[in-house]
Amino acid sequence: MVNGKVDQNHLNALYLVAAVATVFMTMIIAIQPLFLKSILGLSRENAGFINSNIQVATEIADLLFIGYFGYLSDRFGRISLIVSGFALAGVTTMIAPFCGLIGAFMGLSGLAVFYLARIIISLGTAAVWPQIVTLTGDFSNKQTRPGLLARAGFMMGLGATLSYAALMRIPQNAGVTVSMFFLAIIAFAGAWLAKNLLVDIIPRMEAQSMPFAELKTLLYKQRKLRLTFLAAFSSRNDMVMIGLFLMIWFIYFADLLALDHAEAAARGGLIIGYIGVVSLISIPAWGSAIERYGRVHSIAMGMGLTGMGLVSFGFIINPFSLWILIPSTLVAMGQAGCLLAPQTLTLDLAPERIRGSVLGAFNTVGCLGIVLFLFAGGILFDKAGPPAPFVFTGVANLLIMFYALYILSQERACEEDEEGDIKPEKSAKPLNIKDKLAI
Image (cartoon, rainbow, N blue to C red; front, side, top):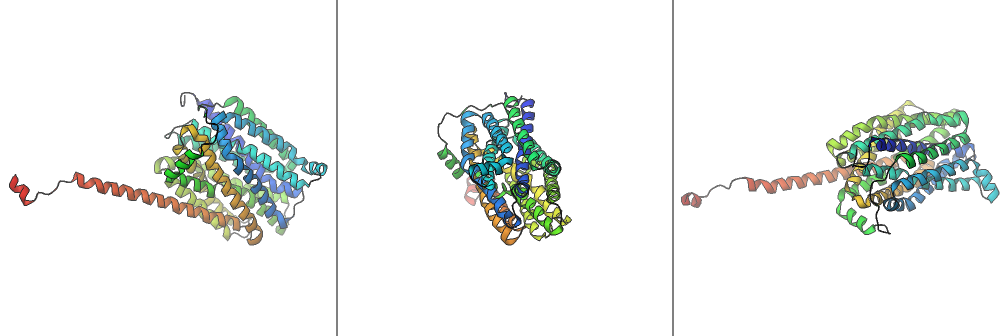
């Protein structure tokens, strides 16, 4: 038994739900460019702007609600939110292929209806994945937390890898509409698994309002918590950027090479799947690194690797060339650390009673980062070229790395000062001539 209430079956169910949720979230983003081009006929000239704006719209919705979802999880439990989120996302995904017909009936464009559908789907997933992380914190303590988060992260990585390496071939072989129906089934399966196999173990919070004062005090006192929030702000968008802009880059660069768009999407899916595989393989190593070297060291290493990788995309001209594997590998090696280390440290610092609310604030900051980076990235993609969004994000990650190194240097300085204060007390004071005479 874990925590007296959770056994290995509950942990296995948590890992399975994590994988299912990641499959759904990964594929809905990856299919979006192909959906817009194939179903709604979106042209290349506005592809970057429209795709990023849809993603920005979903993240703004998440930004408004994800913190509140964290509070609701403290009040009413994690499981009910997970089930409701999966169900909402599944129903909307099933309806989305008919956005053109719905728009014509309502006097709206199909694109406008798809905007609304993606926002609702995103709100559904925003009620799911944060509670998976929070449940991992509920099921663990400070010693076991890195291992549990690493295993949950491994299953998330496995879900993302499966999506890009295998499931993204469904649109090529069966069409976009069938792919959307398949995703709806995935969401309904996630709801069933959560309802029947997971359990809430943390007592419900009685406060009927969000604990803003406690959160503010916690952030003010905990410098490391501020670091985790900054890491979430800068790095939470990394895989969203990769999944969205790299896929757009492949699909529209295919026109220059006279390749089929579905074939280009499959090729892009292989590269993103490769990133997922490398990230997946690195997760156990990151779990060990967090335990051995500490949370802050791991944040610095993860941000440094992803930062260098994203900046290196600036040297790529043709995404179909093998050179793209170099930045992809660097990003993949650091990505797991950027996710696991900040989450682990945040869970360590969050009081149990308001753990969901702290994670809600943490995720709100991450959503804010996604909104800002995607909005800027869409403009940079269209105006400065496809690699520009990656370079922009990479520079931000490197800045967070330097801040983590600064915190480590300050901690070392404090330790040296404390040692300096202690040493004189341990050393014997030399006797002067009066002392000798007295003896």
